[in-house]
Length: 308
Image 1 (cartoon, one colour):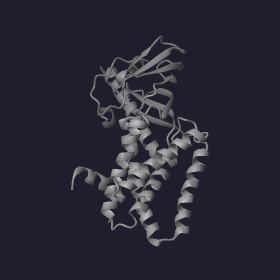
Image 2 (cartoon, helix red, strand yellow):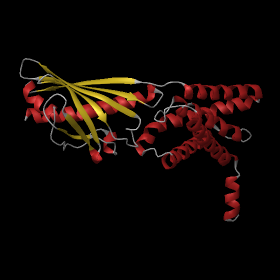
Image 3 (cartoon, helix red, strand yellow):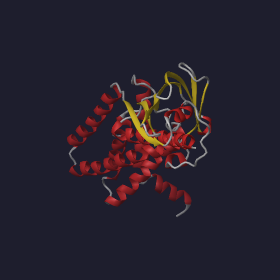
């Protein structure tokens, strides 16, 4: 068999046809959704990560229904299906590597689930049931795309510092560059991490800048300046990074200094953010983890500077 015949056989195999059709379907639906449905362009809804992958799995199962494909093969082919979808998102939708790494478990799970659901559906050969299930999923997708989506959360962490509030305060408002190695795995593989903070003046209303790795800068304004006790700043501008910053808005940050009366200070860090990716039961786990590691990277640096 020559190369041309081999390629012809591969392209016309049910396995490849199912995977290609599923991916074309997904991109067509997302394109139609983006152009016709009045959804905030910054919002990525539940259905894009659950319903569409499930329908992709069902589509592949329809192509495979007359083959003697086994469960392990369905899983393996579904993994390939997911890898192609993620690759297309990287090249055509401009999503970042870390963002795709975060989303991949969700996509993998529902493409595989859809493939097994489809296999069970098509075994019954009940056309009305099959149409009802697909129609229900499409209905959920449409309703979800047309619905309002809003999610706000606050993350709070604290650390004990062996220094007085006055000693800690001078490093809270602004601090020198952080030279410690990254210890959070997402920071190690390229996610922006906090490096330094500058301030125009030490007073209420001053401009503050939080500088992240790769030169990303969060512009902030101090809205509460209670010396040695409390600093609150609003984020007035933030970078739109393809990894994570385009999917979350950090709204406000706060440092609270609690005098323990024994020469030590409990430093509390609070952050408020709006999440633009759904479902929140999945993405908020990541957002909280990232926020906490930003907190602790900064607060451990403040602790190091204060205790010196």
